Image (cartoon, rainbow, N blue to C red; front, side):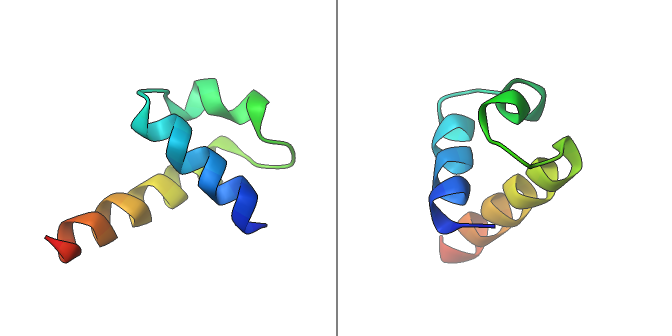
Amino acid sequence: MRRSAIRKIITLHERGYTPHEIAPLVPFVTEQALTDIIRQYEQSKKEQQ
């Protein structure tokens, strides 16, 4: 997956979108993949604090 797609997913997540709402906006990505990306992002954010 391209960095730009991941950046877009994270940006939308921070704006309050759910994986179900993000899926149609990012081509070639499943809701499961979105959930995994968001989970990893939240985990790394916690570790940085």
